Image (cartoon, rainbow, N blue to C red):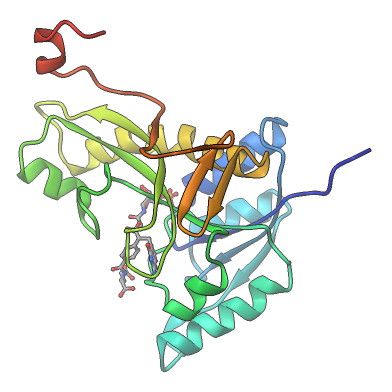
Amino acid sequence: MKSKEFRVVVLISGNGSNLQAIIDQVKAQQLPVVISAVLSNKADAYGIQRAKAANIDTITINNQEFTSRDAFDAAMQQEIDKYQPDLIVLAGFMRILSDDFVNHYLGRMINIHPSLLPDYRGLNVHQRVLNDSKTVHGVSVHYVTPELDHGPVFLQSQVPVKPNDDADTLAKRVQQEEHKIYPLAIKWIAEKRLDYNHGNLLLDGKPLHSPQFLHKVMTESDRQSGSH
Ligand code: NHR
Ligand code: GAR
């Protein structure tokens, strides 16, 4: 018996390289989902071309044509719900979402954020990491809750910050990890390995008290304490 398809709607605002990573994994039959639609708040987002090239339905809703966030979010919700998605994936989506929208999809919406949450919430993350002379940076996947970048984190990956990095070279290194962990995060959910239960996460039936890591960077203090 063939199990029911797992439908995903991806929300973007720009380049869509994370969208592309997801498309590629689906095409390679490594990710058991159907991408039902891609929604952008910007008509000229390159990710819309990526979706069209992959024969995926596209929706563009210009937030600037709405007088309030609530009205924009309601318009998005109406379009998204036509697809009856199992999961909403924010992939470089740059508009803060209202409580009503978030609560409608609570436990069914995830985001990828380019920092090791709870560190560096918000925008302009890579420059802030450099300004603080950090040596380790990374990326997080979390469920979306009304409070910005505060939902439960379940998967992270670290990258080193190198001495000559600028915000662009650091962002590129982080994005290479994003393209690995976001398809994996979606796979866990589609395969029902990961479950969101009233704000608490279960992985393989066991409470997930701290995020899983794909890669960790070995720091000087790890070396000195002789850990592997
Ligand atoms: N909405 C809620 N309620 N909760 C979250 O956790 C959200 C969210 C919406 C987007 C992604 C996020 C990120 O990963 C995200 C998480 C945009 C802004 C922002 O300040 C902040 C965080 C995130 C995305 N946006 C400006 C705004 O006024 C506009 C910036 C722009 O258009 O370029 O919406 O970091
Ligand atoms: C990614 O680095 C993602 O983590 C970040 O935007 C980039 C989108 O790239 N997200 C945010 O900053 C959310 N505020 P992409 O369009 O190529 O996937």
